Image (cartoon, rainbow over all chains, first blue to last red; front, side, top):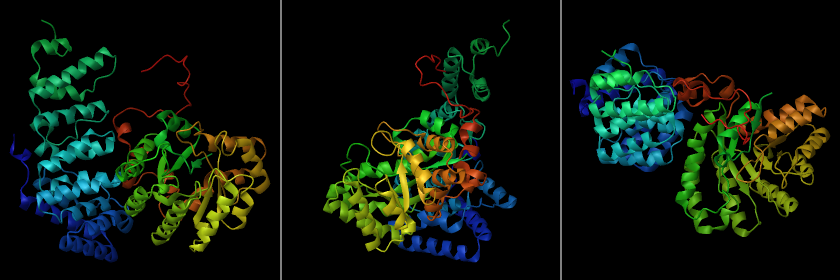
Length: 249
Length: 308
């Protein structure tokens, strides 16, 4: 795996958090800034479920629905620390919700809060939880939550994890990562925005994709052209011939 | 014509229904928390149900270009299971504060028992505390006195009638509900509640002011197109189009709009980033598959043999 596919450490996560907090605060009115920093201090000091629920729950109502306005420089800094993470299509309230969760630096506590919030999360809250994954300390428990999100049927939740978000690429084992890629095709989503896809590409994935292509063709259904880019490096001459990717000699 | 169906239990319906509703002009609907036909016996199943109507059901509706809202509450039937009801009351505030929750409801009476009364009142207090309108379910049996009693209790708790939608009305209850200043909702639901011709007659007699038409479609034999069908029938019988617009669209928007959680721009300008959960930004479109809401389908006919 290349250097870029390795997960960031504590310091990188703190730097990323600071970039996001700075960007968010600079787009909020003074009253909204005050509200948010009060909530963040309260959660950080108290670490109580009730203050987390209130802060997390009220972000959308209190902060409005504007998109998060990261400057090109801020997005650039973020991409340096966490290549593949893009937050350009995320509402400001989602970034605020991520900041609320970063008040928990202990991996176990973070995963517990994440799971607890997810149980009562509406669609926008689920998207915020998953989009913010790169900011959180990793753990097996958090990986299980991520797997849960990938397992569901809501394509937006799936894409909050799979697209423009390197967390899955950093932490999923090969089996789970491969299933995420295959599922993207199953739900008519796209592969190109999957972070670290090239670095994580592997021979098992190629085999799964080819089986999938055969199944689609047998059913007279179209096959996504994106599939071949991934499978090609691992395809045998016979397979290339089978799929007419190689002229018969 | 655009319609809102402000009472539809879509969790019990199929995608065919969503497709037909969108094709008939339904742009938004409200899914009240309700009794699912079989009592829940654990708070955990209630919790998962509430999570489903603020989560997955909202997503399902968005696939058909329909804006989905809901109301949160403990229904009257399950209020009779005291230990369940106590636990549900504890989790309600957490769900009631979610985005797109437009009221506390549907709450009220079923058999008018003491426990139903207790939790009806507790939820009226909750609605005041968090500034949400109330959707009142009036009982099927002993309807008239149950409806009057529901309004008396609302007044006892100091609710503004303009913030209360009294549902499942009929010819016998409409005068009292309108006279007291409440919104009078009618469920056009075959066999048990209101019929479309009777509804049209009421619109002819009363006009559209503070009247709301809904389908209340659920797990029973019911009609998700009830709002659109009633509107079409009303127009064909010469009812003032403005009265039809009020009863089948604008009144629901105004009444539930008091929550601050439902706005016309949600479906007229679904282009802000927050509307990624609507039709325009839906990933299914991005993925290339076109949602089919162009024409009403005939796939419910057994003679249509193609399944692709």
